[in-house]
Length: 111
Length: 111
Image 1: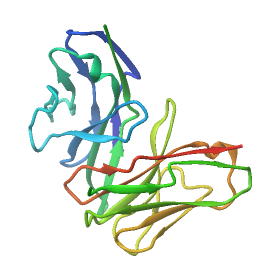
Image 2: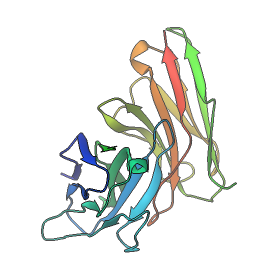
Image 3: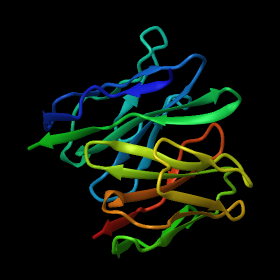
């Protein structure tokens, strides 16, 4: 079955500490992986795509096909990083393009 | 600005009333989606339209109907609102290989 698992509902870290938001996936094939961010009472915004291998707002994510993971990392957390983060994958299943979201992790950065 | 536009932003309904949530995108995306977001449950797919002229059920379609009016517009209808449909509703669009672009959401309360 295709799924995206974000094992932590809530992650609290202190300002300046490293952050790692975990994402594991199950998919038969070669999916594309994404991270989205949702700041308080705002719309979800695309943060990262694994294809582009970019760094946005200091965040990076590496696709590990062996471990089927796409963890989101930042070396030094900032208070403005406090938000809800969703991992998602897309791919073709039975001839249909599908998009699957994880249940999200709330990141709280403490002063 | 290019993007996904949702209306209304807020709505209060009485149980049994009907309403239609409107969504339009101007990015020439093929696929459009309706999600609901509830505390602790992440995003749940209600319906989606992979391309103009097609619609399919998602994870939680009961109590909803959709119409893909044209490539730009994808509406969500609640025929007889129930308190369990109190939620924040997001419309999104994408074309294959790209991330989602989300609307700003509709906060619906059914009393």
